[in-house]
Amino acid sequence: KGFASAPIAVLRNQDGLIKQRVIKDAEAEIERVKAAGIQAGEQLRKLYDKALEEAGECAAAVFEAHQMLLEDEGYLESIYDTIRTKRVNAACAVQATGDGFAEKFDAMDDDYMRARAADVRDISNRLAGILEGHGEKEPVVAEPSIIVADDLSPGETMQIGREKILGFVTVHGSENSHTAILARTMGIPALVGVPLDLEELHTGMS
Image (cartoon, rainbow, N blue to C red):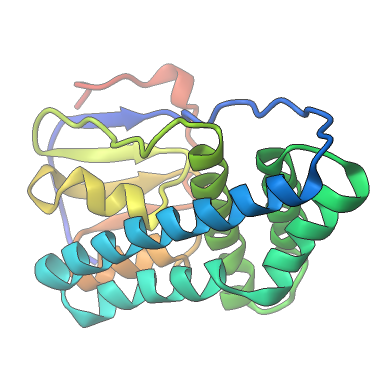
């Protein structure tokens, strides 16, 4: 709910392509996943603290849910099994597992559960990024704007900074997505599932 009028800031998907590599030491790759999981957990705790301070407990709970997913035994065991059986690098195994879990959520009848597909992808992208040494990418928004994107993860939402966000418009997502929940909690007007051609838009348009 709400109304906002401002120039737009277009955020484009920056996820890099992960190359598949054949590995010799599966257990070493699994240890890399475990180490990356610890680093991802630290990132999520920082986002939790930031959300708690800026938006309250309901917004911070989103990152608690991501932490639980990061520690889910079924998710982790699927990654480890992929490394052991297919002999692929850790980041590739994480991406494959994330895609598989997300597809299962997408196929569910319940709207809330379908929205969890984005959470699985967000966690998998975070883990894979750490494994590939990409670091945590922070969206750059120069001035208070209406943020337009294909989709936004909760982490990206918090990293932008509340003072720079006047509204959201996303091509994908649903009212049950964690980004939409964050928007409601923070009192930010949002439209999700809008059929826009992002190639026709650029930052600064109003």
